Every structure is written in structure tokens, then in C-alpha cells.
Image (cartoon, rainbow over all chains, first blue to last red; front, side, top):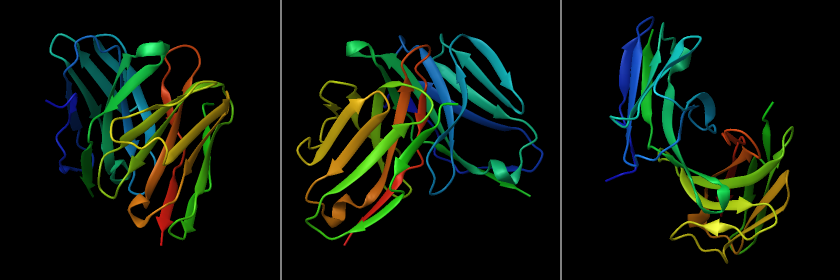
Length: 114
Length: 116
């Protein structure tokens, strides 16, 4: 079983719609959760981080965390063509030596259709 | 804040030569830096974790003698690809983690390596 699982997509949504990206993780003691956006040929860019159960909103983005279900999601409201990218879910554990080991999912490709 | 730079952004080299890639945290101190590799249309693959002042921790299957990592200061880590071969051609990305707080990783812009 993969540690962090995402549907590879592509997920296609029309412009203006809500895009819902999902991620599940296997380790119950995971502490921190991140969503990154990666445009083709570019490096990942941090969008959201979330650490406790519930919703966290930042502009058009809402991250949702449910630790009991080991599930984290990202909602993008009013999707724009510029949101078309691959979205990486990342889950962090505290590793040996005090550093935080982050495991990335394989990413979900989002296509926003004008 | 939390800006990470990489140099060079793109490098082409001949097979058998060595290539050094620098990763710098510009406006924060990074106790830990990470090196990833990404092949086209594939996911990020963690190669190694670099802690300032100590030896890097390599992921399974990554040759530590081929991919030399040095983390000499809280703002600089280097990755040297030794005796590069065409199969080493890839997109190499570093990230840096803040020394305090949530330790979120911030990524550099990446270095595209092409070995001829």
C-alpha cells in the first residue's frame, strides 16, 4: 500500500466550477499535511498546509483534513484555466534526528476547461 | 519569505564528467535540505535528506558515492553528480525546511540536467 495515494487524473472541470482533489494516507501518526501545485516543467509550489481536523480556507482554496478517516482534500472554487496543473499531496512525519520526513503522492493532474 | 534558489537552472554535460548543483535558502536558515529527482511525467522521488553539519541520509536505491551531498552551512547544500551518464539526465529539485516552526518544505526552481 502506498503511503500517500492520489488519483492521477486527469480531473477535468469547467471554468468557474469547484475542483475537488483528494488524498489518503496510511500512517495514522502523520502530523502535517500540505498541498503543492506543480506546473509542467516547474518545481512544486506550496499552496496550503493544514495540521488539525477541519477546514482551512485561503482565498479560493480550502483544505480539509479528517485524521480519523486519514483523508485530506483540496477544494478550488471558481476554477480558472491558470489552475491547470498537477497537485501534489504531501504528508509529514517526524523522523529520526528531529527532521520531518515528507512523503509525496504521485499527484493529480487538473485540467480547467475554458 | 522562504525563497530557495538553485544554480544552475540548466546544464548539459558530457558522459563521464561531474556536475555540481547548488541549493541556497535566501532568506531563512535551513537545518534540513532535501534533494529530489523527477523524470518526465513522473512523481517526485526523494533522493536524500541533508542535515547541516552531518552526513546525508540517502533513500534506498540511491548511490551515495554517485550523488555526493554536502550541507556545509545553514543556507547552502550541494549535490554533485559524479561520472554522469545519460540515464542521470533528469530534473533535480532541492527543498529547504525552516529550522523552526512547522518545518514546511520550500522548493527551489529545479535544475535540468542533460548528459550527452
